[in-house]
Image (cartoon, rainbow, N blue to C red; front, side):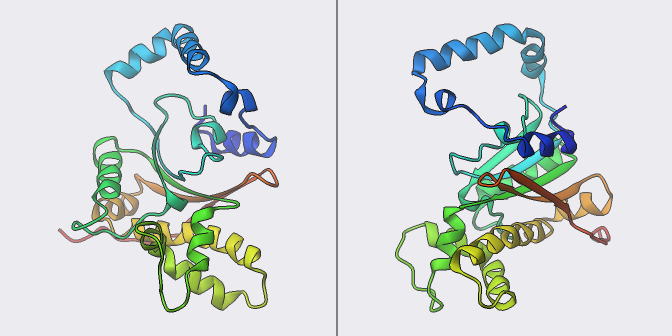
Amino acid sequence: MATSIKKCMMLCCIGHTVSKEDMAGQSYEEAIAELNKLLRKNPDLFGKLAEAQSPKFLVFACSDSRVCPSHVLNFQPGEAFVVRNIASMIPPYDQTKYSGTGAAIEYAVVHLKVENIMVIGHSCCGGIKGLMSIPDDGTTSSEFIESWVQICNPAKSKVKADTKGQSFSELCTNCEKEAVNVSLGNLLTYPFVRDAVAKKTLALKGAHYDFVNGSFDLWDLDLKISPLPL
């Protein structure tokens, strides 16, 4: 099962990747033919999926074309509810903005009742590089990107304070991981997430996929949380 973390890590460590032909060499006709082949091969699976979905995972992953979570973790259809954005960031709970993110979390936790939320950072992340490149005065030059990545400003500040004398590349690598922790912390600002974690029906997991060196690090948050008062 792809829901086995051990198997997921094994696949990453042995360099489980998509071939160049799968990524770019296929024509649309070839891609459709492969899809039809998959559908014919798994008629029972897709018949069940037509009735309902019951994924065990909500996965936040980067939009980067090199790190598709379904390929990295070998998820099969129906096994993971996936949200992808720049740098796989999760903003704090706020009903006035970021409603797309909030709606996805609410649907996965409240209605699908996923058992795990996994936030995956990755090597060579352009979003993190952009965050680390924003001047200290906060000056921005993009219409959306820099405003978005500053969700993880606390990660940037922590990395710069804790790791003196490192190269820019090393700072970015550390920030890729610390930004995951910031997003995990932000998840706990969502009342329905906090409540599920407190009841031990939901686990939060952080991960970092280093596709350059072929490694996948996974960690849990050590949390002691009480349910929110009614």
